[in-house]
Length: 212
Picture: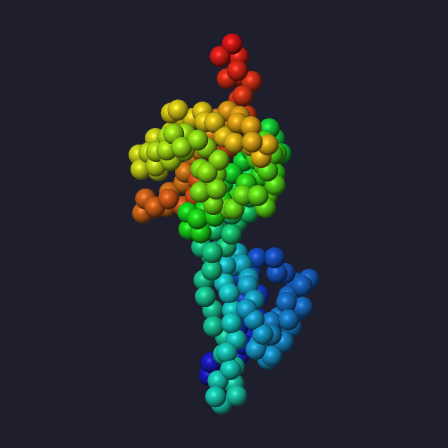
């Protein structure tokens, strides 16, 4: 006969196949899983000692019985962890710089901008839509064209975004300042652009010194 769900759980625990489950908490863990099984709750997740993540769903059958469906979600968990680590690095970078940080997601085409970004230009978060067009509209036409071309070249050639990076931009006050843009894109295995992150830095004083 096929083992019951409780017997399957006991084998997992007794064989030491579950990370973080030992003699001190195995009874509580099994009891919680059995309750979920009987009530058809879910999903619940667990990590094996081999490092693989599993997700379990409970499905009711027409005869009133319940089955458990397992799926391997290791890749998803690794991606989530990578995102968390990226967000932590991003937060630290924002705290440690006087530059305005921005990030563009090519899948959603949305742009996130840090508080410092808006502070440099004098705008509030609601003054600019989370897209690239609102940003380009703040540049003189010739600067906007040059900026678009520089971004496109970087995306196509993957060469560093370091050519002609200085642009004039209109602040909320109506005055123009000089900014330097830094950027770095990220591509997937197929060569598609995933995201681009970068910064703007007010270099007006340096530009004025060059003129003087």
